[in-house]
Length: 210
Image (cartoon, rainbow, N blue to C red; front, side, top):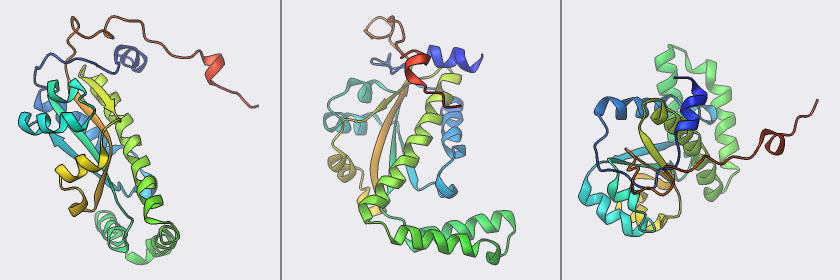
């Protein structure tokens, strides 16, 4: 299927039919997240993949009671680093250099420049920088889901602090950024499923500067 067809097919699903997403499809979506680009390649986040029904039921009330949480096959919680610590940055470069068989001297200048750059930011600024990388990965996940004909819903509008506490994210140096549910659409009960996709025209959306 062409990319444009996949983009036209997908939408932010409002109601799921409760069917489980096949493991191979979940793995494909997760691999797209893993392969998504991020600033300096640091991938400053983790993704919690939740399929446990009881846990999803506990999360739903703190996620504005959005029904997709409970109906979904899987809930993905994109949790950003709460800070770019020297340990995290140094560990990444050690890992990357080991895979590429590079001596530390090749990347030391860049590593040190990143340490200086993040040190100049507040902890809040560091979190927001990391959270932006979650949204890039989210976009890749949405497209990978569409390619597999798996429905997905990106979600904000949840109580970040309550969710973080329930999932013990602060103890892991993480803070939630955005959610995504996976499943299969219930066409009969989803009011959005049969409606036309609405997007702004190219003329209104794009400004070409020559």
